[in-house]
Length: 440
Ligand code: NAD
Image (cartoon, rainbow, N blue to C red):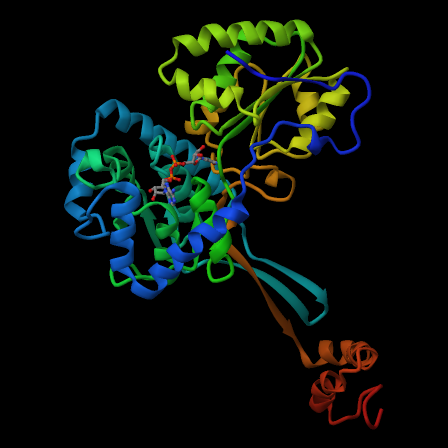
């Protein structure tokens, strides 16, 4: 088992991002590769989606839409234990996301002058559930619950067609949709799925927003079509960073690094520690645990990739500087005073405090959302939430008196910007007789 070490003991470099491990994911180059795919879907609709599904997923689709009977069958055949776990996951996620709902707020700016911020859900969303290397029924929950809690009136889910499951998405994904009451599901993956949602086809009405995690092709298509559709943050290959000191248990640290490396050969697992003893113990533990786990090849590749590594720092102060610069999708704090350290983290998609809050809990059952910004985007973006699906509309309501009071200021600013028609629109309401007006 090889995992690289970066020794930053002593002084930290000026721009930490230059030395920290990170996947070289060229989404811009991928944008050029997906441009013809999206264009094809725009021009030829469902015929293009079918051809692309045959090319990339090896499935000849009769219809891109999953029949209602397939959703019902998937739920009827769902293992009761999986059903109970999904139901608990949904219950907890719903509890957290329900609390995120915003109420409209009216501010009385001046007597007779109010501004109300009205929160309105987007009309229709397309939710992407990945299904290439691994399948993610949990991502159905994480996408659908916030959209439902936001009150989105129309939502559709898509996930890649699977040759092993009769060309439908994975049955547990279908069952999760059925459990959540989602009736509109498509068997389409990759960039063509994002384009199908953005442009619409004969079988799928266009949406206003696409959310959900996915591989580089999905991220590139979202980047390309942003503007035509709204998107959430780019949630690409999974990342875990762990900030740990000598008090951390190397068995837990190794297990958690492995748990996220399991997602993808380009998933990132980074340990930041001021303890060389812990670094040595974790490395030894990784060798044992990777060898014993099911997807050991994929995990070993992810851990030995340039996106993963162990970063040694002089103290936790420097450790905090490193994790803030890295802005991990998932950040675990395994230090003696984990709450105090966590409170000082500024950049992370989600923070997991102490030995009993592992990322795996957040992946499925913490109640938090697992669709989180990756690739350093956590320094400017948030994970999926009810807020993702809402727009705040300002509703302005002023009386004649309140406008009269504001009018001189508006006219002065309009003149300062050399936009006299702006001032005229105000003066017209007062017969030009206000201060600053033609007769004022
Ligand atoms: P995916 O569904 O994102 O992608 C599969 C699709 O990619 C296929 O349907 C195919 O159409 C398309 N494709 C494959 N090769 C292609 C090519 N050469 N050109 C164009 N299109 C191609 O599934 P995946 O590949 O397993 O990736 C899922 C990703 O999502 C993983 O990296 C995982 O780590 C990540 N993930 C992230 C989060 C998060 O919140 N950040 C959560 C879950 C999963």
